[in-house]
Length: 97
Image (cartoon, rainbow, N blue to C red):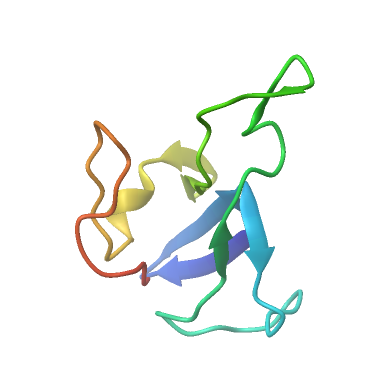
């Protein structure tokens, strides 16, 4: 899933990969507000597989990539949620823009 927005004059895109479910309330092109539930962590794509085989020990998660003005950047710059970079666990409340 991709979410596009502006922060001042900067154009941002956040890409959320490996989602298990996407909120049925979301639609392509629909505006959303900060704090809106977008989906759950999952094992979609290649998150739970290696060479086409399911891998044990994989846990549902979300891969968040940020792009600012077309360039890859750390999405933490615009997320209210802070993450422990050693284990990926959220250390406070859910995401917001």
